[in-house]
Length: 368
Ligand code: G6P
Image (cartoon, rainbow, N blue to C red):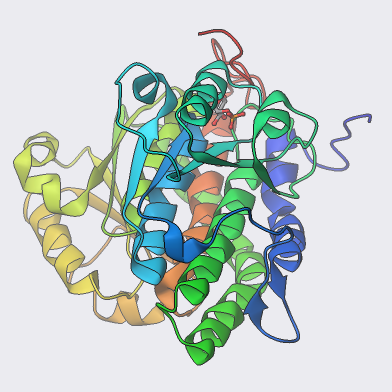
């Protein structure tokens, strides 16, 4: 394999743009498109109805994919899920019982802490499921069940397409679990699968906001700190947005649950502070609007990522609105990942950093 940037300036730009294709490919691996059913590519050695709890363990961006999946698995399959950072999980002596489901997410399949956590869970008798992008990796080899992401090789150190493919595999997994446990009906399953089938097209539409984001990045590049807010599944995406920005632009950024704004970060808000609000028009949108009003009242600069309905009902005048396509919001994080990545990317390009090889970071952390 020879890595090729094609006509792109950086691998990261190429990998962001590839997402509709590779997420679509991952989707096709996990659903039966014509029957509109979730169809995991392997036979599981357990029944979903016997699963009492699940843990998800990963590092970095993969851990945020896990944090989003927690919402999906709990809501669609009613399985309680704990999400852990691998370096915490392995030393925490978390109780694991025989038959628990232990899910590990890793692009490289070689992250030392994630691998150690996998071995720990396996030794305790958990069923180990790994979501990996490199099928020949150590984590894949040592897992009981491997659910591949079909992102293809990811070269940019900051993960983009592997993340959205992880989300797609996890979304299909949650739908499959919900259907197998009878928590969602056959017609609900078909509805959810239809929503997933829409995702690649919606991601392609989201890429169209690139020129606007490029312009916006010029103002972000002049700031010292950026706050990202979100509720529900947009909360872990806010964490990922902040991680992406700091990784490659070296601008300090923090992600926060919008409801926690009052409990600390609101103290930082002034007219120099950009606040990126990730808010598709979903069941918690109204709540996020009141947080935006709190930001606006303190002169904060709101950058709102939402859809047409959200833009109409935002009740504040954002400095910028990134308009994303209308969609049923269940799987919105997969689509909203695109503007988040583009904002970090263009800010880094303006800052002149080494986008694909940011300082001090490694693509795969194989030491503890
Ligand atoms: C490194 C990379 C991140 C990645 C994390 C986990 O920190 O720079 O992009 O999210 O490792 O890597 P993994 O290969 O386990 O997903």
